Image (cartoon, rainbow, N blue to C red):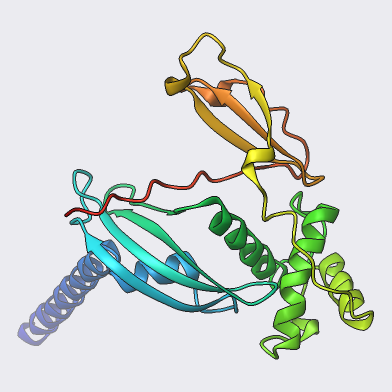
Amino acid sequence: MRSLLGLFVKIALVGAAIFLLAIAALVGLIVYFGRPLSDDQVLRALFGPKFPGYSAIRILERRGERTVEHPRVLVVEVVMENYSGQVTCQGEANYIKGDPSFLSFGWYDWACTGHSMLVAGARQALFEDTDQSPAHCDVYIEDIALVLKRWVESGWIDIDQIRTPSVRARVSYLIEHDVPTHKPAMLFDVSTARVHDLAPELPAGEKLSIYVLRCNGSLDVFLTGPKWWGQPLGLGIGDIILPTPVKRPSIQP
């Protein structure tokens, strides 16, 4: 009887130890995955090393504590490998550790916004194997193909790595026929945008500017009120609402 009781006690102790270890492991996982992102993790989340496109990323300034009141702000300089060579751009990452956490990035000017869209589209063509994406308008295919043509000719990728059929076919054509490089439509000039004032009753200083790049390469700007998402922008298949550049911080004396 004593031996049987002793066995039960041992089993209970082992079970309790396993339970405590499981609780400790669970707490450890919660703490591990709940910790705030480091600066390097923020950059990897934004730019990622898996595909070409960025040859250098450098942090120029750090500020903030990753809280809602004091978001972590990283001012970064990025070298993009684009259709005609390297382009150096600067922008700003904002990160808040919370529930949920928040991570965003904005470039300081429109030119860099366009260059980043070209690189992002080229990267997308390396893992998206369908032509059903609304972003694959003829104009965008041509733009993205110019970037990928340089990547292929530079030896960074093989043409077979381009998984989107329409983009791969266009890159092959550009290379086989030695088509000269020209300026992509995604490097838009916002001064040429067609203006649509949807809030004529508001003072100019209170209006928001929403830029839409159309599937045919044309550009529209809608002047709206704060609740612009409730106003008609006439979006069609493949039209893109452009990310507005962030304001460059003033340099303190």
